[in-house]
Image (cartoon, rainbow, N blue to C red; front, top):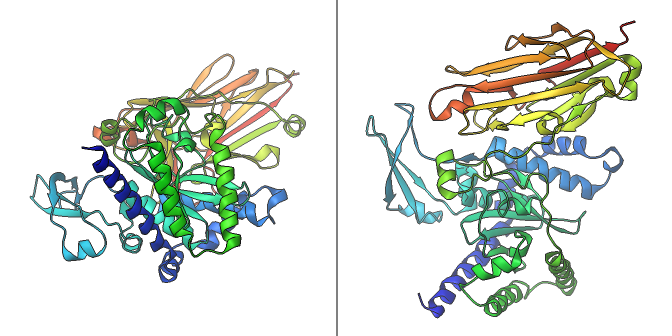
Length: 492
């Protein structure tokens, strides 16, 4: 393809997407989108998760609401489409190529249609790739394009300043402007990831070249937010010249801003200056950005090379007694998969977010949410044959010892999945029955204890899902099924 042909193709893509985002400004469409959001529930959760000294700060609440919106969208509203499913045979259908879009498909921007057929009963199904955000409010399924399209509309309906972000290597996500931080936040609804811009460069190991953000006000090249080694990225940017790209994004931005007020244009300019300054700063990898892709079937992710590192190094967490616990001689820790939180009952109900932030050892573990069944649990990493997880309480820095432990070990198995629990002290280990509740264990004299679980076996491609820890409804917000209580003191 000639240089001029590459420019024409590139410009066409820029122009089409700069027009597409204007759909999000339709007030009637925004009203339909907002009506889909359980706003009062999400606001209540956001308020609950705000720091106690910032609950009255509207900017802090808006950022907290964005996190809740991402979680709700992934877990309750939208579903990922891998392949069609035969309702008669209860089996996945096989792809049989592309189909011809109908007039109705074209009406909603579906110029591509995927056809599927059941190998057992020969039933057929089709999957139109809708590009109309209003239609996606109804279908609520798709892959990254549909997810980002619908999520960006919903954010705009809630009056966030948003961008639709297109990665030329084949991914799409959203950026939302934080008034609190005065910068754009990366938001990937497929992954429920917020402010993890190096997720693709580091976790997915993508070789990014062009990442362009589109909004009602501007078209911006934001590649430098999502990459670390700019010299390597420049070598991959060989479709058009850098000068040409800057000219075209500036031209499109001027067109979009032709009718904005002087004060609004000044605000946009200040934001751009801050953004360009941000691009110049060296980027450091943050927690969560090493994660491989979690959306989509394992085989599909493997084909795309986006699994990332199979197992990330886990930093061990060791629980030690607080002053209050030393006084009362009791440590009590509970975990909820629906909230992905630990509550330390023995220390003023203090909260620790995310299962990994309380675990001593973890191998091939992740938190799974089922949007259709509205359930959450800890499971083996997809494609893994076994996994382990443990929690440790340690009194070694004190002159006290453990007297007794009480545990609840919630595990759910399917097919021939196997879950093995045990608790170990300084001198001995004891196997525990899977599913035991308030089971008492004599650990007298131990300076530390480790509660651990191993998951293995299962059948077929979904074997990883046949062993589940702390499975519960995502609507169950006041029950913490995983439970470890330690009584300690002096043996004298």
